[in-house]
Image 1 (cartoon, rainbow, N blue to C red):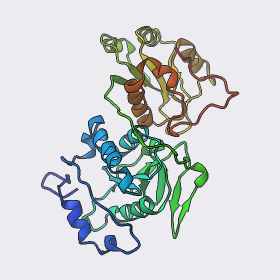
Image 2 (image 1 turned 135 degrees about the vertical axis):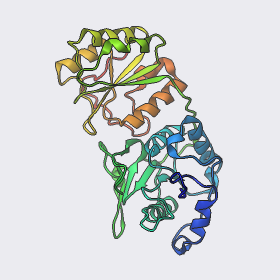
Image 3 (image 1 turned 180 degrees about the vertical axis):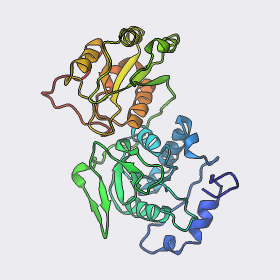
Image 4 (image 1 turned 90 degrees about the horizontal axis):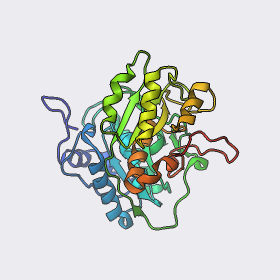
Length: 331
């Protein structure tokens, strides 16, 4: 990002030029690196599935030539892109580390230098077979990450999964939390945009106004529920909307509005009623991971999307124990 009269915006060549002038990026302990610059450069609020494909293809086409990859990405949609790439890069055995900054690299008080330097060390000298986010001394699983702050350096958290590594005077890895590398070749998987709607419920919402959504039903609806997965089942308009959507073969996933904890539709009568109707628990996934997973499933096996939501593909959710009661009615 470079300062302009209308605010910070991407500038072609600016990163390469800036790094060449910073002595710390020429340090002997850093791995050698190549900069690939996408064209056009975009503010991350403009990034979507077509751009995910560009990034994933660039990694796949250079996979044998490099020990690791860093994706320098704006923070606004970083967790979405990291989640998407975790599904797209099947059988990954090398690190793909997203990083960025709250304050752009050229500013005096930037957090970009530290984030990028450590990301380079991690990408070049570690065996991390995952898509990760490195930010403010923490390495997080990409599809477990969520941005919580638009101002502070500690912008990202991993609400339902431990850190993969923590940086202080040394780098401490938590190997028990890191995925095992694949012994199979990398396989690039596509993600296409899908008709997904998000319904965040709140007290006083008029559900009768939502019927227009079902005139051209989406493929899936993410229901942002209360607490452990509860919703106002005594509201006849709400129940009617849910039933009509299910009757139209819309996959409805239940995702809590709470930052951490996940959904347990067995805990309360209201949640259990949704389960019995056919709503599927999203367990402890982040919103970003669920959006990308739905698009991934609807791209590759739309008929089985409802059955596959609760399968653990890339460490994006905590699997059910074999003895646990079902938390979603699979249709």
